[in-house]
Image (cartoon, rainbow, N blue to C red; front, side, top):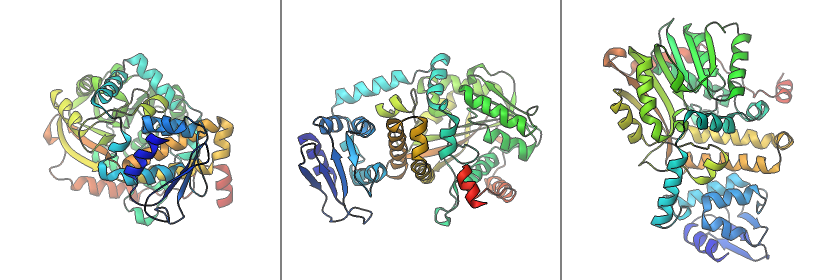
Length: 432
């Protein structure tokens, strides 16, 4: 417990945290009688002798594994999200350095391992996609919005308390507006997820869309949706690596895709998409990003959630795209939107705990909790953002001011109204 005690003594400067070791000895941290939420101190119990050392040696991995394995228990009324946000709120002053690996050699080793892990040839990319996205359909249905948007929602006014469904609909309007689409255009949607954005573009612009992704169940679901809507001749989905796509497109979108490409593959991504886009075309990219220098993905996330994944810095995206002949015409940093999204995903996950445990087990449920809470803190207390970039080959491809984005987004929002409840039979029956 000595090492963990030293770290927490240095970090916790507000609120109150009480940790009870496996032998019953309590350690208290922070100057306040209550926690940051006013509900009393956050109380944590360690259930075995080695838990504290496992956490302290590499907190970003150790804490997650200790929680997953039941070696670290958070006492009610708090839960793992409360603990993660409490500790990272305290750690903001030093940029979270207290929780990162110490020593130049260790840091260099972790960066090298992460770099190697980000090498994603087609076969490995397909395996990574299956690991992340081929979980049961019901799991995603339980915590995502009705359209299964697994990327940041757009909270135009967080104080307005809009539903996740509305915020995701507003996100699609914001993205579509930036693409400057005209009816009948041909669009490529790389990393199409469960097909919601491709179907949205067809609905509003009548364009032909090809969506490609590497998770079999995602593509099967996309095809089912297109068929049910009677647009399978216009909106097509293929189980395909983006590097295998051929043809010419008026517009290209990639939403939540660059995080899975891997930095060694940025040159081929930008070169290949440049070949696919017509001379007067527009490419829009939306991805998680770092509001600072390049880094590397922590080992826990790579191991359990996004193998091969990496969240890029803006400098990496701009530098590599310029080498491939792209011109970056617009950049927007979306700061806290994803923290609000992840907070709602976490709430819905907890609401459906029993069903998720039945689908998998307690360990998976705790892993999912930790993933969502950790991701939320990165966007709320850390330096993660979402980047939205507009790329062109010819500067005359888009209007001279950004007014078109605001105007088109408003037009699209006025044409759609999101449902007010989640796609869950019990909730829907109660609402009706």
